[in-house]
Image (cartoon, rainbow, N blue to C red):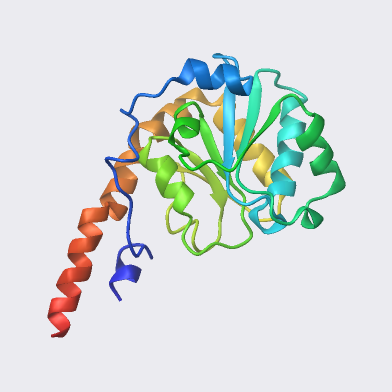
Length: 216
């Protein structure tokens, strides 16, 4: 199966659409969201439900914010089932000034462009498309070491893998990429290339067409 050969993706990623060379009005967006230019921004993109790891993410971030003042957690995605979110996580979402909820976004690229790290501590994934999108924009990722995430993330190449459902593992990874500038720079330098090599959309289309023709 060609989708298995190409990392499990059926369509790949459009590297022109998701590019770190694109220009956005970041100062205006930061001002609108309440993010300072010097803030280190973690971003979560996805449904706000337990299985996406939102409870662990908020707990780990609050712990990190207790020792680091210039960090923000930017969350974008629909609230679908708040009953699966802990009361403490909901309180932090509504009252913590370092956590910014941007709601659903039809175009996530501007938010990615102002972020430093994407975090996806999911319990299960098909293929983590947000990992492809962030990686194509040269943004390192922290993701659960599960099928669908570890198909995309290569340790120390385009991000870090963590134990699923584990606040301590997530906290350590978030703190590590914040503090270890050398590692973060190393990952940034190889992130887009890692995604392009395995998931470039036109390459995947070509492989699907070739496989189809071979079957005829």
